[in-house]
Image (cartoon, rainbow, N blue to C red; front, side, top):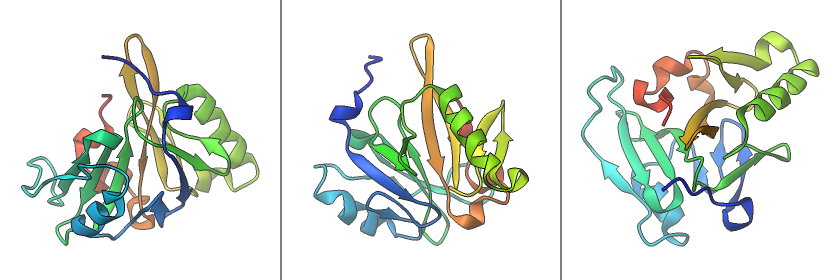
Length: 177
């Protein structure tokens, strides 16, 4: 129930900040996401067309359970957010650092170190209960439970989502899973 895939069994994806996460590009339509994942998994996406009730933007949710991915689309049905499951999602690398299924404090320290060579106030930020984010990478490092441990569950955003990440996607995105 709480099994965590080792990195050796995960797909390895690269982050292109504000553009793409692995084969997924921000701005894709659900059918394009399904096509991009079609060669990777049998069931590339379960797409919920009904808008989430708490979301004032009318975000539509898609999920690829087999790969541990959750997608968020705007009313225009363009991809505006990607959440990667800490237990079974693909490993996403940014500047050589693994971001998925890691100890939260290690990723936070890495972002802090990155901010030392950038403008600190434009790199590091915190949301919710202290989850770190990187403004230059377009990511918020949320957490996910596995038994009594917490592991990183990153949420990736396009540039326009970085102004106010908590308002850009529905509240459920930011909850500890």
